[in-house]
Length: 146
Image (cartoon, rainbow, N blue to C red):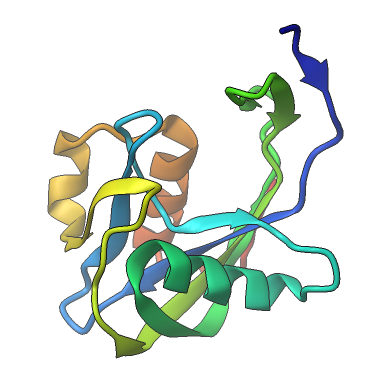
């Protein structure tokens, strides 16, 4: 089956931290990389709600949005899916905190846990996710727009 190039899909992710400053990450089943919870927005869904829903689906945790980390649209980050679809990254990444729930692995991950920022350099993470984690560690005053 050939690939079909489609316009960027609006996606949301959440950088969720706990009271120890650790970041919620999931180890993806498709790549083995660690990633922030997130995914594509459903029709009729506000983007912030998409981030909240994706965190719940992928981690079992309920969160509330506390801010905006940035908008990530790297034209070099092109994703080829198993069904032949090819998309360019377009992800709005929110900051969030846990309000309830129990940490749970989904069918999209093999492991979900909070990881201390000092341990992040020692695990497999895609460069675009690493960039978001770096931006978070910088404690920026304004969101990243790129």
